Image 1 (cartoon, one colour):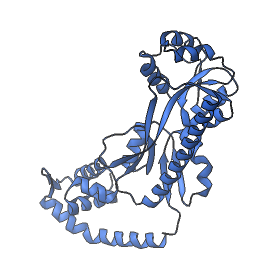
Image 2: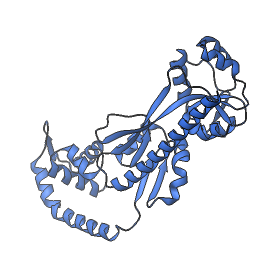
Image 3: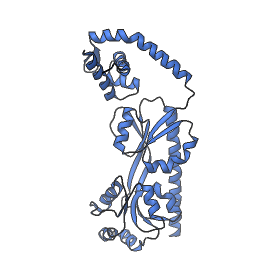
Image 4: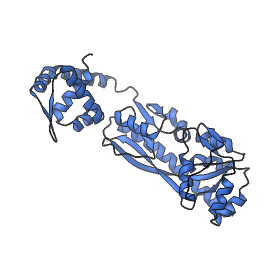
Length: 316
């Protein structure tokens, strides 16, 4: 086991701020990370370095001795780090962003080459994204799910509506008539006999919509499991079959007449999308630029969707 410089930096931050949470904020890491560093350092030295009081970390005599011993050395290292950063400040910043694949492909992919900073995209499930944001592996996430992490701020910026769609060659007149009359039992009977598409990741859209609109869990399995929602839309385009997807992801295919919205539900199923960021970050400028770009894209899509609906009503 070797002496770890990060343990000492964390120890110094706790000593000077007085609490684990304040140390975490000053270091831009999570509070559990601070606790882990301190516990590792105490295990390595074999000494208790702080007495844990209700609202303050009180250094022990051994803690005071260690602080005085390492202080000047750490100050020199920090000065060197600051000087190095000043010399490298013109270098491109790298931002790590967590989001679902479909959202990236639909909103951000076309803008990648124009960004004035490096960007690393990570796809995954939302709980893992939240964990990675809290621990510093990600700088920004886009998520419909929020948590109670003290280090993370969630800001709502848009909504996605889950809609029932079908390929343009799917006969839907009988089904739409039943849904319009509120004959949901008869409508579900027809829907269960159709060809269904879902994603490899999960069936949350299908489950959530079915429970809210029909008051029961879907008791059938999709016929085709494909990698992502974009694949569903491509498979359904100018074809037959059904699926449940967020409306903004199929706006272009609807405008081109390749698929159609069959039903939005008696009570629409909507998810609020949030930007998730750490409350303390050194990349506020770059994150704000990404957020602005994404919000503008969603606003354009919402305007397009409203225009399409207005035109559809005129035709009817």
